[in-house]
Length: 608
Image 1 (tube, one colour):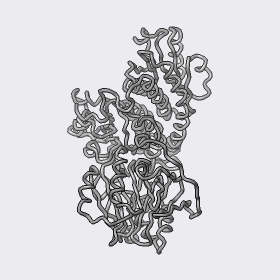
Image 2: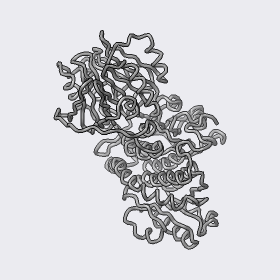
Image 3: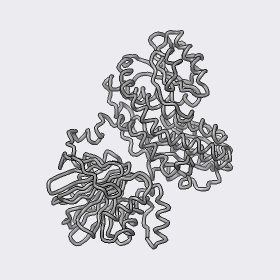
Image 4: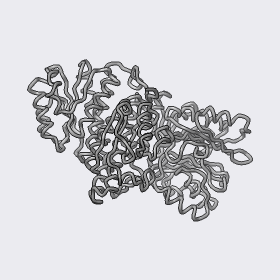
């Protein structure tokens, strides 16, 4: 969710670090910083906002250091601020750390460290790491880092340096990527390849559970137990632009494939191995959930479709009425909202003008205001009484993909939280749902293997001028989302309908030239959906079905069938979304469209 750069060698380290951070700007960030080991001790420089602000601060500082680390931060714990920016240090100012990922057990670690006399100065989860290193340091810096990472639970890519214990940088990976760049008399470490390309194309990608001890003339790989794990380097042949996309041709495709990781980050620290859900950091013991008479969700575009899924989840699990409104219409209809209501604004950026206006209307009427968004410190989070961050990481492609599915995961967590607070579900039932959520990232990986089939379907249908998408129940909003994706990036007319409404008008459109995408997983309305498939087929419509693996019945009736893994009914919306994203992506390619920057659209709509 942010960028890391480290360097040790004979070049001027500040130039290498700043250049590397600039090459990671595409990932998005809200603050940045560097720690440089000078001849007379360490220098720490941090800044909120753009890297240009950091450069301005670095001007005039003596730059004699030859090793250091840098970071661009996309805030997760703690608002964007200079104090919360990386690198972070321990009480003594000897150990410096940059970190990507989320430390799930940071609160427990922090409490123990405070009890032992450590002083914390930030609101971040990362700060526990340098304090752990300080605790374990006995003259062996590498061993202190190793013991620290063994205490840490969660996802992390950590790079640390020390003002004592020798001239070296230590890195460790568990989930969050780190890559070493190998030079002559110099070596590099980064969270992605672009910062390395001006200096070397010989790289080693760290594996999960692996550490690296980096000096100017050597790189040594070990596991978390100190055992050597040597291997040969690879040669990067990508262009710089391709490297930013990690080898993917477009950001949209990269972000589609990031969804398993993104959903894991949404669940991290909120869902344990047994399936227990906790949102105590976000919501605490909020009485509003016990007393609320109704919930209103306001959102736009893709986020509105997430809100419609949220309605199904909250009503079914927590048994409280939910109303979903287009944010652009909400405040103009004199909504019946008051102090006994909860209003939830959903926005990827947290800066969507229509959504913010609807949230303000709710706040003015005394409602308890929540937001679900991806950007820490955004306007939506600042005006809200409580916020659930999705932790999807920066989304560069204009058409939302991973932001949408992480919103679904966050809404599922919220529904389970409300159900528990209101006693609407017994604990064992909540754990069953939680375990289904934990399985979702691996199931998405299986769906991603369908890329060749989706590409083949796109080649077959790229010249068709219109599409109809049908879904029932919780799949209806996914039909709308699938149609929206196709419109956004391939410029093909498409409409999403609840399948039962087809015979109330849209059925007139169906003939031998009308492709109909039907979402038909085996859920409680499966038989009804199969009736709609029959209605399409008897009118010669072309059926493209998204169905549960092993469903021979629909495979016989549909013209084309895309199978997804069997799952919980409330996980199916996440799984059926993925092939629709892939289909839209390949349709846009077939038609020569600009996938990442479709015409007339902006990533964040900040005007009404």
